[in-house]
Image (cartoon, rainbow, N blue to C red; front, top):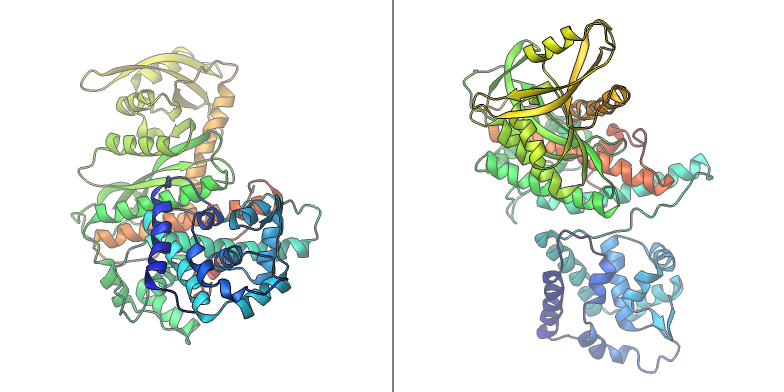
Length: 527
């Protein structure tokens, strides 16, 4: 059987039309996409394959759509039949229906269809349609809802069963994340290049998890996997230098953070209000202090110069997810960066409270938080007005009062402060500024809430384990490695949440999957 080219073109147009009607922010089921594809041109041409076959009761269109689903979800025949049996709505979307009942073929019937009913032409069409749907989704930023989060409980299962299902889900989830995240990293690899983009990404993942430089990492990787060819460090740096400026790197990773967020939201991770923290991190620099983007930082590891980044992170247990990270340069206004982070976070999640350290204790920051109607707790600097209040209330364990703060432009804000005994020295006070209704009776509770801010500090420490080393003075390359480490961290957090919810129905109290295991599977070229 030979299908005319216009028939193939009409199928692609129907896929394009459906994707154009979608809201890219909402995840979509693969079966829903297939439901909206009209395969009647194919079924008419292929009807001869079914003439006289009285015992075959399943529509060819449903069987072909099931074949495409199997290819896109990378299932075998047995897994496909089990999946359709559990997800009967999906089977209905594909067209497995007879007299208002769901009628799903068994594995033997489906195997017979694949081996004897699909000729080379039809098999090629299913392959091409699976590829075309995935390509269109990637280009339009559409996320497929793959039913990873089915909230099955394994609490009563044996450790061996849990481990087996954990390993299965881990590999499935990593494949899913790689398919949805990797395509959005643009390295401008030509079609005739010796190495495809995945080889470069596998190399970058390897050097990130081993904290190596590109040169050392590529050499180690070639020793570790001598049968697979990987690019060398010069080739990798050549492609990284193709980014025009830091803004192009920022835009690219912002879109990747969006992808990770939409995947997380599709699993129901951000349905409730969340607490967030904003903080900065410094990366030491040992070269010329006049190098672009190098700032003065707190002395560490033999230098007081380095690069600075600001980020906003969800600090709920089990999902300490970094929503956005931005670089800070010599001429950047910290208040503008702060507002960018707040504005972005508000567009993604419902914010319960915002936590900040003393670096953000300033009038403009507080005005921004009030502008967006956000509750906040900020550790306050002990300026003269606060020291005076502490002296006046000497002997009191808890101090609660209102103060007025202002800028050089006489912009004034009235805020509430509360002071608590320092954990390690009761003679000292730790002071916080807030717009929450704090009293002496609930001040300790508010102080405990602020301890959640340490979640962002923990995330920075973990991100260090995901960061490659580089001696390059090219800031674009340094920024790429930093944001790549944030992307890996988010993927690791998301993966732990997905697997934990799948196994136990709850977010993990501590990581189920170590960073080492995650890295071993992620950079494995066969994954």
